[in-house]
Length: 280
Image (cartoon, rainbow, N blue to C red; front, top):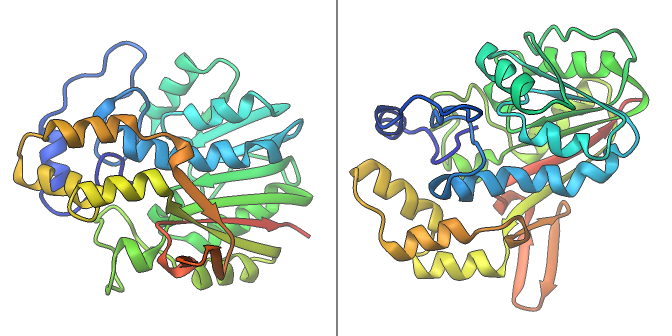
């Protein structure tokens, strides 16, 4: 998924035009893959990192595959609790980077629709902010079912189509092939034979909602507007983006969730979807 900003026409080109070669140990920012350690990238990095942080405990002591590992920070976070972490990515440069930087992760290059693992060889498959890029999502999910052991978990996060590409059947992001809403994600997993599917929604928590209010109603739109206009960031926006933490996001269950009488949220209004499904 897009890192610094969603890839809308003009935005990705602007970011890539500003790229310089990656320093040793740092994977280049492409505008499509988020990386740690950059203040200007911090909102998107934390928004992705929160899924790893909240779901890593489910990987404790288990054999885990991350299908689509990107920079590798998430696989390494999971490696802190898992018995073994195998990371697969289609991008050879990303795989080489993971091998150099994250010694406790076993990285390999492969197509996610043909996973290089034996049947029933892992306990958990993690696929965060990747499935929206795949041309054959159904085949990928079937592959996940194949490599999982009985009662194994598939954990998926993806942008919510309803809020990420509002009013559209085709994604705004040209690098996304198909975005999903909660019902579509559930149907995809159930059709592949998974059971006990639960889908949660990721929302801005109180601190991020305060930032939204300070920046014209949306800190996301404020970042995108500066990129499209090739304009400098106001110091207040730069400071707020750099200050975002994973604790500033709320991950809440499917359906209506009331935190108080003035805060009624529905999963269709979420930013991202986070699904957990069980292989029978």
